[in-house]
Image (cartoon, rainbow over all chains, first blue to last red; front, side, top):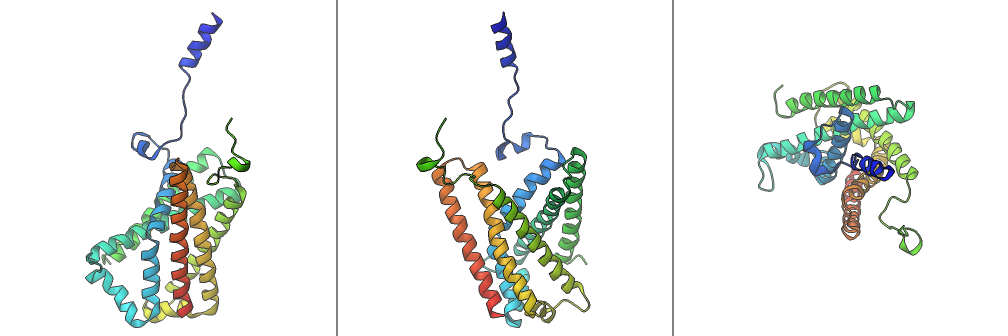
Length: 147
Length: 120
């Protein structure tokens, strides 16, 4: 009797596992979860685009001639890739930087003030996503010449 | 239980936590201060052109800050990418290889950035 109850209890025991990247689509993540995984994705994206960022740092600063090369990249393109694709890469960097920045400030704030409640976690995650999206859209519009 | 210390120590595991946690936050603050410093100088008066942009990085205190940012970036990204590899790559050999590539990639990028800064 005792054993069978025990077995029954074991059968319905829920199993918790870490979410794997491939399972993300089938999970309904809370806002804090979205902030967390996007923080990671934006970080990896910037890691991969680091040489592009340093090239822009190099070309935009070294001389007036290189500054013109920097500008022409987004018009004439380079390495067989058209200008708009480079603009898209710059746009990806802008999003990644802004999101990573906002989510990072959220983390620092939580660490400094011990704001670890459910409500704050949810609201600040939504705030970081909203603010970085807004700034990305404004800078993106500027990048693609909408104003 | 498997032995994970001594000669069997997991060389690509998380064997220290606080040091990484703290250095990631300190470097983050340095980079955030840099971002605000650049933006403030960029948005203050006059159109944004080559002269304004290069003048920002011509100031000695900005050169020093930029150098600190390059080193901070190297350190910050190393901690972050190591976390990513440790979370998603379970094979020790592959993980070690990816960590080695990360170091080469980051040191190469930091070297290039310092070289650019050196010329200014």
